[in-house]
Length: 241
Image 1 (spheres, rainbow, N blue to C red):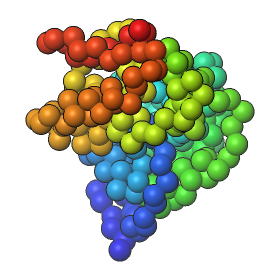
Image 2: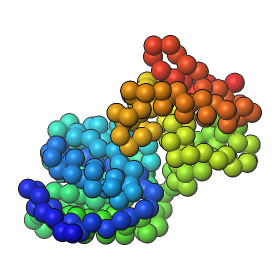
Image 3: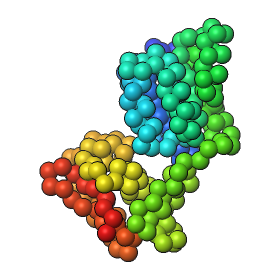
Image 4: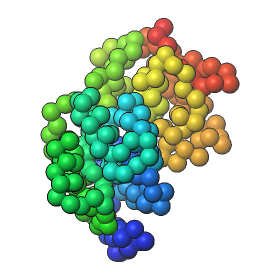
């Protein structure tokens, strides 16, 4: 079925089950919501922000396969985000999504380090195809492996090993562990865990889902050289035992 919204985004609904993490940085709330929901429906794990400086903060903590960046955003423009990504040698594929469509604009975006350039209004299926193309493209820089105690977490392969043995984790358990390891030894609040562990962060906040997942995760780490500590009234942190 083909649809076209007020942003001129047309789409044919096609399933995509690939497990990729995508960052969307777009200051228009309607378009941001459309991109987040559309990509999530097709199997992508999506984080969405409205400011360029917030996009950089996300990129500091998480490895994204692809970032879809608006050029004009509050905080920092998308081109500054591209410069930060390339300066810090992040492995993220970057698609600029913008109304700036003159040849000099395209040249500046691509020369700064963007991998692709999509002009508004755009076809959603074309955007999906460009995201898939970036996924297939081999990248020269891989994200660093995170090590805490006996745990090694590879954010590119999304694999976790304990003393060299692969640890079987669900997607939610992996997401929570990655967040705790990246922030360690800082305390991570429940809202951050909900936002990172679930696609709809409102679901776990009103239930005991976070406590259940943390209990299961603790049970899988008895000899990992780390422990997940509850900080009453503040959240949780990962400590090396």
